[in-house]
Length: 425
Image 1: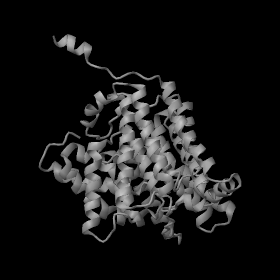
Image 2 (image 1 turned 30 degrees about the vertical axis):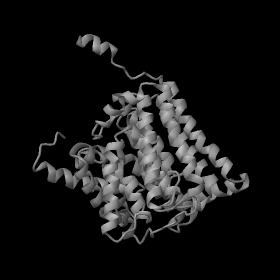
Image 3 (image 1 turned 45 degrees about the vertical axis):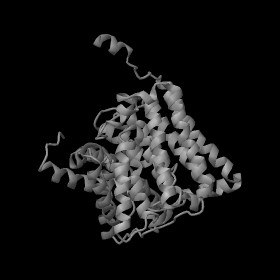
Image 4 (image 1 turned 90 degrees about the horizontal axis):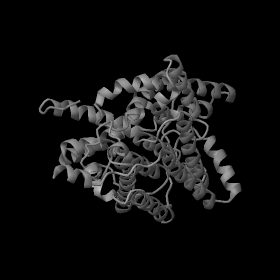
């Protein structure tokens, strides 16, 4: 009987929110612990100082600037700061929160640090006060909004102001950025209709472009930077393969029925807002996160690319969004599209820009999830060319450069496809 079938069908196991906090905290602490084992304490101390003194604009690999130990400690601490804000706001752990925490940890390997993120938080907090809302309502713009944290560091350290003046200007523009991000993000969502998962990346791209245009008008130029680590693969690939496998094991431990739900999870398009923890359960979400991470590592290995601060940041971001829109089926077409693009254009698949376009370009996963693998491959192919040409607009101030490019690509695709087929959003 249908009613009996419904009763016997496995239901995703509910996980207490306190356990979810501890799990995310444990992964952040694991990054810190890894850092402590990577370098001598005196080198870590010097490395953290070097990271804090770096402007952090794209692309600045903190594994080169401060060393592996300092980079991982900065990453874990930034993640813990994000978790502390979520806890103080008394919010539940959801897919978007998981994505935000892992994204913060990832970008804390190449652009964010334990100091330059705070003015963004203050700006969002002030916006909440002006709107007479709680800070928790705007926690996602606060966490993801740290994409523009390099603006704070660039003023303080990169524009050659007197230190006190630079710091004051950096804090001012950081707070201003945080203040305007929330209203901007709401309106820009309609630009790509949720088919680009990194919505704050688009927001940050537009905000960064406007700010950089103003800065250039006053003779302030953000010069291109490429600090790119090499030679870490033999050390990092085994470690982070274990890191991602642990997520699969943890997911199964939390819910032994996880693999029974994985097919349902793969059927989601990923269009914003798709919270896998809500739709499919916390256990299967962690299984998916681990699988997404392993696919990313496999792509890096097959292309011969470097696993360093920026690419590991890409992997951690992919993994985080494995709770919020990305899964095996909808990311592979994007990766293939970028790879084909490198075969037909002037870039090698292991070039810094090309490998980051592949990893972060999975922001377009909802296009593949909705319109099929062929359209997804085409989106990845075009994304490669677009992302290689938009960084100048914001002068490297927006760390989510692929999110910015992905928003442009998604807007074009949805506009064209919408002329021929009905799109719900």
